[in-house]
Length: 303
Image 1 (cartoon, helix red, strand yellow):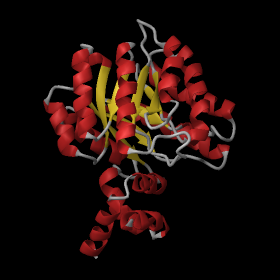
Image 2 (cartoon, one colour; image 1 turned 45 degrees about the vertical axis):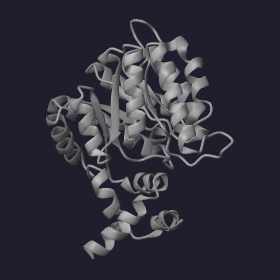
Image 3 (cartoon, helix red, strand yellow; image 1 turned 90 degrees about the vertical axis):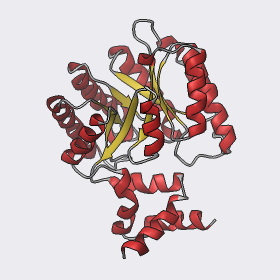
Image 4 (cartoon, one colour; image 1 turned 135 degrees about the vertical axis):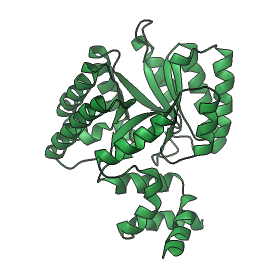
C-alpha cells in the first residue's frame, strides 16, 4: 500500500526527483545518448530497438516534428553501423487526432526504414487505441510485408482472438512479426486480466498460438518464469532461432538478460530516449509500484 501511495503522488514531485528513478531506464535526451548506449549493448551481442519518447500529442505540428525526428534517427543509425530497428507509438503521429495523417506519417517512416532493409515496430498503446492500431498495422503490412510489426499485450482479454483474426496476414515467405508483452496500461478488469498468475497463463497461451502458426515473435518479458516456459515451448515446437528473440527494457533485469544471451538466444533491448521522458517514467512507476521505495531511498541517499 505504501509503494502504491508513493507511486501515485510521485508524478506531482519536481522532475529532478523523478529523474533519479528514470536515469537507469532511459538512455538520455539526445540521439547521441541513444547511439552511445546502443553501441555498448551491441558490443555485448545485444540488438536494440530505439524509441523516441513522446505520445498522446496535442496537435499535428507535434506529429510532424516527431516524424522528422524518426527520419533523422533512421539515417543516423544506418550511418553508424549499429544493429538496431525502431519502435513507434502511433499517438506520437496523431492517431487520436487524425488517423489518416497518422497513417501518412507512419508510412513515410516505414518507407525510409524499408529503403535500408530495416524494420519498424508499431507499439500497442492503451485500449482506446487497440482497434485503430490493428487497422493501421493491417494497412502498412499490406504495403511493407517485411518491414513492419506489431506489439500485443497478453493481459488484454481480446489478445488471443486478435492473433487468430490476423492469421490471414501470416505468409510463408513473409511471416507476421509480433512483440508479445504482458501490458503496462491501467485497464478495467472487464477487458484486462489483473492477477499475476492469470496474466502469465495467457502470455504462454498466446505465445504457444504464435509458435504453432509459425509467426515471428519478440518474447518481451523480465519474468524468469515466463522465460523458462518460453524455453520449453521453443523446444516443443522446434522453433528456429530466426523466428524468435527475447526482448527487454533498457536497465531492467540485466542478470536475467545476460543469462539468456549466454544460452545462445537472440536478445533485443528497448532503448528509449528523448526530452519527453517524464510520461514514460511515471507510467513505468505505475506499472511497478515497488520501484517507489527505491526512488525514496535514492532521494535520501543522494540528498
